[in-house]
Image (cartoon, rainbow, N blue to C red; front, top):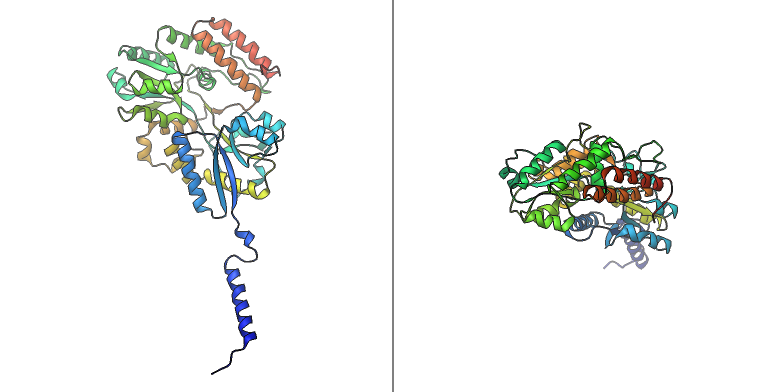
Length: 420
């Protein structure tokens, strides 16, 4: 029997150990360490939150070295305080108005992560309201535009063959629907919705290139405010919000409900399959075209977390905005896709039976869909607009008085006088 050379055996075992380590990834076990980050998710409950959870789970399953965990909270209101306390999130979804965040130097721009090879193309305006002084501070998390949903059966019963294309035709159709004994239309006294109607009548978001003034007290403002006041006086529409409008719509008590692409799945749920839901963009105004304001939350990156955490955040937000994920997001959350490539991934037969999503894509593809301003003072302008519009339409003030006061107040805000 041949004798065993112990030294040779030890050397052989050591060589095998080295080969085994190399087979697991080489020089350091740190190379395979999982980077775990937390996403402050602002959507709470329902199909939107469920869809985000499903996508995060898919991401985690397909990215072995990167993990995203969801923390459901109102990030726009809470993330700044967390940053000020020295414990910011790595990644959070926040709204357009990021002035306070920038003043506190809380946000890191995404620009350093974007190269020619990974640059993504979005619908016009989707990124624009996230750029400040050439730096991109919010990467798309969702996109919504306002549209009108309607009960197809009630339209047919009222003899309305197709959705109205102009505000004047809408007024005629509301009169027909009222004869059925239902609420013709529920409308939000919400600035983005009012602005869309205003712009369709020739109005603009600002009245100068410096963005230091607005002008609502003009022909566009008078036309818009007077039109809705007339509808209100005839009881052709009511002001309402959220759950109450959906409840009335689902109970066949309301024919048209004002909403956004963000609420499409909730509108479908309220109908519960009892009737077919249609959708159409805001009608054309005196300008000859419709208008829409692009809104939505954005993914923000914070100063403080490690470079590895920031790179993991970039990996996720880039993946989230790839066409396949955007198609899934749109089909299940109700939000519009962020890009034409994402829209192209949605099957045509699905869009044919989901008009709310189809209309959202139609709106985003138009040059008349513009970004919502990200100037913090404009949030106060919009609050003043809500109040002036409601007061004028319901008769608490005259249209001329409401518009005059609105311009004075709004321009004070844009020149630095705050109500806060």
